[in-house]
Length: 333
Image (cartoon, rainbow, N blue to C red):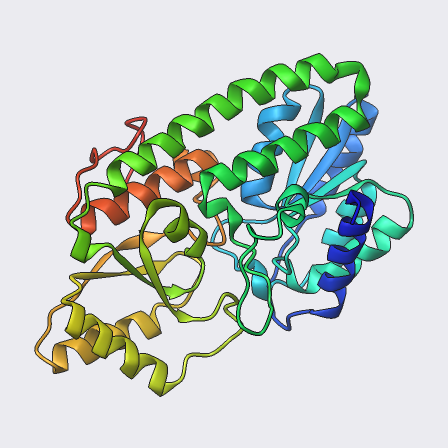
Protein backbone atom coordinates (compact mmCIF):
# COMPACT_ATOMS: atom_id res chain seq x y z
CA UNK A 1 0.00 0.00 0.00
CA UNK A 2 1.47 3.40 -0.95
CA UNK A 3 1.72 6.37 1.39
CA UNK A 4 -1.24 8.21 -0.07
CA UNK A 5 -3.41 5.15 0.38
CA UNK A 6 -2.25 4.74 3.97
CA UNK A 7 -2.98 8.38 4.74
CA UNK A 8 -6.45 8.12 3.22
CA UNK A 9 -7.12 4.86 5.04
CA UNK A 10 -6.13 6.41 8.35
CA UNK A 11 -8.26 9.47 7.74
CA UNK A 12 -11.28 7.36 6.88
CA UNK A 13 -10.67 5.14 9.92
CA UNK A 14 -10.60 8.24 12.09
CA UNK A 15 -13.91 9.33 10.64
CA UNK A 16 -15.57 5.96 11.03
CA UNK A 17 -14.25 5.09 14.49
CA UNK A 18 -15.27 8.37 16.08
CA UNK A 19 -15.15 8.56 19.83
CA UNK A 20 -17.93 10.37 21.62
CA UNK A 21 -16.83 12.91 24.14
CA UNK A 22 -16.70 16.40 25.41
CA UNK A 23 -14.17 19.15 25.76
CA UNK A 24 -13.86 22.87 25.43
CA UNK A 25 -11.30 25.09 23.76
CA UNK A 26 -11.15 28.72 22.75
CA UNK A 27 -8.98 29.02 19.67
CA UNK A 28 -10.17 32.45 18.48
CA UNK A 29 -6.86 33.98 19.53
CA UNK A 30 -4.92 31.25 17.72
CA UNK A 31 -7.00 31.83 14.61
CA UNK A 32 -6.20 35.54 14.77
CA UNK A 33 -2.53 34.67 15.07
CA UNK A 34 -2.82 32.51 11.94
CA UNK A 35 -4.20 35.50 10.06
CA UNK A 36 -1.44 37.71 11.45
CA UNK A 37 1.16 35.20 10.24
CA UNK A 38 -0.14 35.47 6.70
CA UNK A 39 0.07 39.25 6.86
CA UNK A 40 3.69 39.00 8.00
CA UNK A 41 4.58 36.68 5.13
CA UNK A 42 4.88 33.57 7.29
CA UNK A 43 2.91 30.39 6.78
CA UNK A 44 0.67 28.97 9.49
CA UNK A 45 0.95 25.37 10.70
CA UNK A 46 -1.52 23.75 13.09
CA UNK A 47 -1.10 20.59 15.16
CA UNK A 48 -3.86 18.77 17.00
CA UNK A 49 -1.99 17.83 20.19
CA UNK A 50 0.88 19.39 22.10
CA UNK A 51 3.38 16.58 21.48
CA UNK A 52 3.09 17.12 17.73
CA UNK A 53 3.00 20.92 17.96
CA UNK A 54 6.26 20.91 19.91
CA UNK A 55 8.07 18.87 17.25
CA UNK A 56 6.71 21.08 14.48
CA UNK A 57 7.91 24.21 16.31
CA UNK A 58 11.40 22.75 16.69
CA UNK A 59 11.64 22.18 12.94
CA UNK A 60 9.73 25.21 11.61
CA UNK A 61 11.82 27.70 13.57
CA UNK A 62 11.31 31.23 12.26
CA UNK A 63 9.89 30.21 8.89
CA UNK A 64 6.30 29.96 10.09
CA UNK A 65 4.05 30.05 13.13
CA UNK A 66 2.73 26.93 14.85
CA UNK A 67 -0.61 26.66 16.66
CA UNK A 68 -1.81 23.83 18.89
CA UNK A 69 -5.46 22.93 19.37
CA UNK A 70 -5.69 20.59 22.37
CA UNK A 71 -3.94 22.13 25.36
CA UNK A 72 -2.46 20.99 28.66
CA UNK A 73 -4.50 18.59 30.79
CA UNK A 74 -7.06 17.98 28.03
CA UNK A 75 -7.85 14.44 26.93
CA UNK A 76 -7.78 14.16 23.10
CA UNK A 77 -9.76 10.91 23.18
CA UNK A 78 -12.78 12.80 24.47
CA UNK A 79 -12.15 16.10 22.74
CA UNK A 80 -14.88 17.62 20.59
CA UNK A 81 -13.67 20.41 18.26
CA UNK A 82 -15.30 23.81 18.56
CA UNK A 83 -16.20 26.12 15.70
CA UNK A 84 -13.08 28.14 16.55
CA UNK A 85 -10.94 25.01 16.18
CA UNK A 86 -12.41 24.35 12.74
CA UNK A 87 -11.82 27.95 11.67
CA UNK A 88 -8.23 27.74 12.90
CA UNK A 89 -7.60 24.65 10.79
CA UNK A 90 -9.28 26.24 7.78
CA UNK A 91 -7.03 29.29 8.17
CA UNK A 92 -3.87 27.17 8.42
CA UNK A 93 -1.63 26.34 5.48
CA UNK A 94 -0.65 22.86 6.73
CA UNK A 95 -2.04 20.60 9.47
CA UNK A 96 -0.39 17.80 11.46
CA UNK A 97 -2.22 15.16 13.48
CA UNK A 98 -1.49 11.89 15.25
CA UNK A 99 -3.90 9.51 13.60
CA UNK A 100 -4.58 6.00 14.89
CA UNK A 101 -7.90 7.38 16.22
CA UNK A 102 -6.18 9.66 18.74
CA UNK A 103 -8.15 12.79 17.92
CA UNK A 104 -11.63 11.40 18.36
CA UNK A 105 -14.34 13.73 17.07
CA UNK A 106 -11.81 15.75 15.10
CA UNK A 107 -11.46 12.94 12.57
CA UNK A 108 -14.31 13.97 10.31
CA UNK A 109 -13.04 17.57 10.18
CA UNK A 110 -9.60 16.36 9.10
CA UNK A 111 -11.17 14.21 6.39
CA UNK A 112 -13.08 17.17 4.96
CA UNK A 113 -10.01 19.40 4.93
CA UNK A 114 -7.85 16.73 3.27
CA UNK A 115 -10.38 16.07 0.54
CA UNK A 116 -10.42 19.80 -0.25
CA UNK A 117 -6.71 19.77 -1.04
CA UNK A 118 -5.24 21.22 2.16
CA UNK A 119 -2.01 19.48 3.29
CA UNK A 120 -3.11 17.26 6.18
CA UNK A 121 -0.27 15.11 7.51
CA UNK A 122 -0.61 12.05 9.73
CA UNK A 123 2.67 11.84 11.65
CA UNK A 124 2.38 8.08 12.25
CA UNK A 125 2.52 7.40 8.52
CA UNK A 126 5.82 5.50 8.39
CA UNK A 127 4.93 3.59 11.56
CA UNK A 128 1.76 2.38 9.84
CA UNK A 129 3.87 1.12 6.96
CA UNK A 130 5.70 -1.07 9.48
CA UNK A 131 2.72 -3.24 10.29
CA UNK A 132 4.47 -4.87 13.23
CA UNK A 133 5.14 -1.58 15.01
CA UNK A 134 1.66 -0.18 15.60
CA UNK A 135 -0.01 -1.81 18.58
CA UNK A 136 -3.72 -2.60 18.77
CA UNK A 137 -6.27 -4.14 21.09
CA UNK A 138 -7.89 -7.49 20.52
CA UNK A 139 -10.76 -5.53 18.97
CA UNK A 140 -8.27 -4.22 16.37
CA UNK A 141 -8.45 -0.67 17.72
CA UNK A 142 -5.18 1.17 17.16
CA UNK A 143 -3.11 2.28 20.15
CA UNK A 144 -2.19 5.88 19.26
CA UNK A 145 0.27 6.58 22.09
CA UNK A 146 3.41 6.14 19.99
CA UNK A 147 5.14 9.19 21.54
CA UNK A 148 5.81 7.10 24.65
CA UNK A 149 8.55 5.31 22.67
CA UNK A 150 11.16 7.93 21.81
CA UNK A 151 12.51 5.84 18.92
CA UNK A 152 9.01 5.74 17.42
CA UNK A 153 8.63 9.49 17.89
CA UNK A 154 11.90 10.03 16.04
CA UNK A 155 10.23 8.43 13.03
CA UNK A 156 7.24 10.73 13.47
CA UNK A 157 9.67 13.66 13.58
CA UNK A 158 11.09 12.61 10.23
CA UNK A 159 7.59 12.49 8.72
CA UNK A 160 6.98 16.04 9.94
CA UNK A 161 10.32 17.17 8.53
CA UNK A 162 9.71 15.64 5.11
CA UNK A 163 6.22 17.14 4.97
CA UNK A 164 7.61 20.62 5.71
CA UNK A 165 10.31 20.19 3.07
CA UNK A 166 7.70 19.20 0.51
CA UNK A 167 5.50 22.11 1.54
CA UNK A 168 8.30 24.71 1.62
CA UNK A 169 11.18 23.35 -0.54
CA UNK A 170 12.99 26.70 -0.63
CA UNK A 171 13.92 26.18 3.02
CA UNK A 172 14.75 22.47 2.76
CA UNK A 173 18.32 22.76 4.08
CA UNK A 174 17.09 24.83 7.04
CA UNK A 175 14.55 22.14 8.01
CA UNK A 176 17.08 19.36 7.53
CA UNK A 177 19.57 21.06 9.86
CA UNK A 178 16.99 21.73 12.55
CA UNK A 179 15.66 18.17 12.26
CA UNK A 180 19.16 16.76 12.75
CA UNK A 181 19.73 18.92 15.84
CA UNK A 182 16.39 17.99 17.39
CA UNK A 183 16.76 14.29 16.55
CA UNK A 184 20.12 14.23 18.32
CA UNK A 185 18.37 15.46 21.48
CA UNK A 186 15.71 12.78 21.10
CA UNK A 187 18.37 10.09 20.81
CA UNK A 188 19.93 11.34 24.06
CA UNK A 189 16.51 11.01 25.70
CA UNK A 190 16.07 7.48 24.33
CA UNK A 191 19.49 6.46 25.65
CA UNK A 192 18.64 7.96 29.06
CA UNK A 193 15.40 5.97 29.19
CA UNK A 194 17.16 2.70 28.40
CA UNK A 195 19.83 3.38 31.01
CA UNK A 196 17.63 4.35 33.97
CA UNK A 197 14.79 1.87 33.35
CA UNK A 198 17.40 -0.89 33.50
CA UNK A 199 18.17 0.10 37.11
CA UNK A 200 14.68 -0.83 38.37
CA UNK A 201 14.79 -4.18 40.22
CA UNK A 202 13.41 -6.83 37.90
CA UNK A 203 10.46 -7.78 40.12
CA UNK A 204 9.38 -4.13 40.33
CA UNK A 205 9.33 -3.38 36.62
CA UNK A 206 5.56 -3.00 36.53
CA UNK A 207 3.77 0.21 35.60
CA UNK A 208 0.14 0.49 36.73
CA UNK A 209 -1.71 3.58 35.46
CA UNK A 210 -5.19 4.96 34.89
CA UNK A 211 -5.42 3.91 31.23
CA UNK A 212 -3.37 2.05 28.64
CA UNK A 213 -1.27 4.96 27.38
CA UNK A 214 2.13 3.44 28.14
CA UNK A 215 2.30 0.20 26.17
CA UNK A 216 4.82 1.56 23.65
CA UNK A 217 7.00 2.71 26.54
CA UNK A 218 6.71 -0.70 28.15
CA UNK A 219 7.70 -2.52 24.97
CA UNK A 220 10.60 -0.17 24.25
CA UNK A 221 12.14 -0.17 27.73
CA UNK A 222 11.23 -3.54 29.20
CA UNK A 223 8.42 -2.56 31.59
CA UNK A 224 5.23 -4.57 32.14
CA UNK A 225 2.26 -2.20 31.79
CA UNK A 226 -1.21 -2.50 33.29
CA UNK A 227 -3.90 0.11 32.69
CA UNK A 228 -7.21 0.25 34.55
CA UNK A 229 -9.05 1.53 31.48
CA UNK A 230 -8.37 0.67 27.84
CA UNK A 231 -6.34 2.65 25.29
CA UNK A 232 -9.15 5.22 25.13
CA UNK A 233 -10.39 6.97 28.24
CA UNK A 234 -13.86 6.67 26.76
CA UNK A 235 -13.89 3.09 28.01
CA UNK A 236 -15.05 2.46 31.56
CA UNK A 237 -13.37 0.23 34.11
CA UNK A 238 -15.66 -2.32 35.72
CA UNK A 239 -15.59 -3.65 39.25
CA UNK A 240 -13.96 -6.86 38.02
CA UNK A 241 -11.18 -4.85 36.35
CA UNK A 242 -10.48 -3.08 39.64
CA UNK A 243 -10.57 -6.29 41.69
CA UNK A 244 -8.30 -8.12 39.24
CA UNK A 245 -5.74 -5.34 39.45
CA UNK A 246 -5.95 -5.30 43.25
CA UNK A 247 -5.12 -9.02 43.22
CA UNK A 248 -2.24 -8.29 40.87
CA UNK A 249 -0.82 -5.54 43.12
CA UNK A 250 -1.00 -7.75 46.20
CA UNK A 251 0.36 -10.90 44.55
CA UNK A 252 3.28 -9.07 42.91
CA UNK A 253 3.96 -6.79 45.91
CA UNK A 254 3.85 -3.71 43.67
CA UNK A 255 4.85 -0.61 45.69
CA UNK A 256 3.43 2.20 43.58
CA UNK A 257 0.77 3.09 41.03
CA UNK A 258 0.53 6.26 38.96
CA UNK A 259 -2.11 8.87 38.19
CA UNK A 260 -2.28 10.90 34.98
CA UNK A 261 -2.68 14.62 34.42
CA UNK A 262 -5.49 14.26 31.88
CA UNK A 263 -7.42 11.36 33.44
CA UNK A 264 -9.60 11.14 36.56
CA UNK A 265 -7.84 9.70 39.60
CA UNK A 266 -10.87 7.90 41.04
CA UNK A 267 -10.03 4.45 39.66
CA UNK A 268 -6.42 4.65 40.84
CA UNK A 269 -7.65 5.67 44.30
CA UNK A 270 -10.00 2.68 44.28
CA UNK A 271 -7.01 0.42 43.55
CA UNK A 272 -5.07 1.83 46.49
CA UNK A 273 -8.02 1.42 48.86
CA UNK A 274 -8.64 -2.13 47.64
CA UNK A 275 -5.00 -3.07 48.21
CA UNK A 276 -5.03 -1.50 51.69
CA UNK A 277 -8.09 -3.57 52.55
CA UNK A 278 -6.00 -6.61 51.69
CA UNK A 279 -3.16 -5.46 53.95
CA UNK A 280 -0.90 -4.18 51.16
CA UNK A 281 0.16 -0.53 51.13
CA UNK A 282 0.50 1.10 47.73
CA UNK A 283 1.49 4.71 47.17
CA UNK A 284 0.88 7.09 44.29
CA UNK A 285 4.29 7.07 42.65
CA UNK A 286 3.64 10.31 40.85
CA UNK A 287 1.52 12.05 38.26
CA UNK A 288 2.39 11.20 34.66
CA UNK A 289 1.74 13.00 31.41
CA UNK A 290 -0.10 10.65 29.07
CA UNK A 291 -2.21 12.35 26.39
CA UNK A 292 -1.20 15.94 27.12
CA UNK A 293 2.01 17.74 28.10
CA UNK A 294 2.67 20.12 30.97
CA UNK A 295 1.94 23.84 31.15
CA UNK A 296 3.04 25.99 28.23
CA UNK A 297 6.34 27.73 28.86
CA UNK A 298 7.65 25.02 31.22
CA UNK A 299 10.17 22.27 30.54
CA UNK A 300 7.40 19.70 31.08
CA UNK A 301 5.42 21.60 28.45
CA UNK A 302 7.80 20.27 25.78
CA UNK A 303 7.87 16.73 24.40
CA UNK A 304 11.37 16.09 25.76
CA UNK A 305 10.43 17.50 29.16
CA UNK A 306 7.21 15.48 29.23
CA UNK A 307 9.04 12.20 28.60
CA UNK A 308 11.93 13.12 30.90
CA UNK A 309 9.38 13.71 33.68
CA UNK A 310 7.59 10.41 33.04
CA UNK A 311 10.76 8.34 32.79
CA UNK A 312 12.39 9.88 35.85
CA UNK A 313 9.21 9.71 37.97
CA UNK A 314 8.54 6.05 37.12
CA UNK A 315 12.11 4.91 37.68
CA UNK A 316 12.50 6.63 41.05
CA UNK A 317 9.10 5.45 42.34
CA UNK A 318 9.79 1.82 41.41
CA UNK A 319 13.17 1.70 43.13
CA UNK A 320 15.47 2.53 40.23
CA UNK A 321 18.17 5.18 39.99
CA UNK A 322 17.60 8.44 38.13
CA UNK A 323 18.61 12.05 38.82
CA UNK A 324 15.97 13.94 40.81
CA UNK A 325 15.92 16.69 38.15
CA UNK A 326 16.02 14.29 35.21
CA UNK A 327 18.15 14.02 32.12
CA UNK A 328 18.70 17.74 31.60
CA UNK A 329 18.44 18.87 35.23
CA UNK A 330 15.32 20.89 34.43
CA UNK A 331 12.43 18.98 36.00
CA UNK A 332 10.33 21.13 38.29
CA UNK A 333 8.53 18.32 40.15
